Picture 1 (cartoon, rainbow, N blue to C red):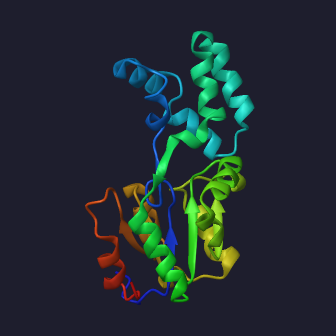
Picture 2: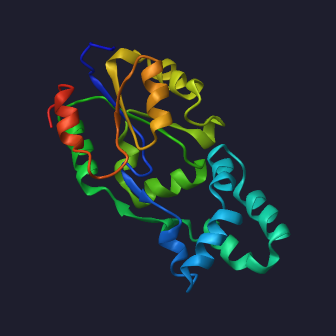
Length: 206
């Protein structure tokens, strides 16, 4: 077990800082919830979206689905063209913690599975995303969590020691990789976790 007190916080972004779910958009495009769920499990699937997080071009991704599901062209294009509507807002309490850490001078970084272009767009909408000391965006690096390589890239690029970092993510698989590499980790699967208390337990001034 890592007993060294961490000095640096590494955030995931989706569903830790941003409330992301394609249903935020598609509830306005489908009157029938069952039809929406079918679309999101058979057409614009999580696996399809993950390839954009891996760096696939959005126009290519949309064209592939339109070819196979021409009857759903407008809904497919909406995923790309109306992407900001898949984010309903922020986890306000977690963003407040992030800003508090910054005011206290705590080094803060991010490793995120995110399309490169959509991350640029998100920084325009949510300026706090532009304030990290460093960010590893999967789509830019063509690497995805929980691949250990993307964590090592953060450590190497920014000269960080794993034992000095606490990593926060909503995915247990991503948390387990961080721990395997020697990082502290906080699993944040939902808002039932008191993130402020967890950070205080690791010695951070929040």
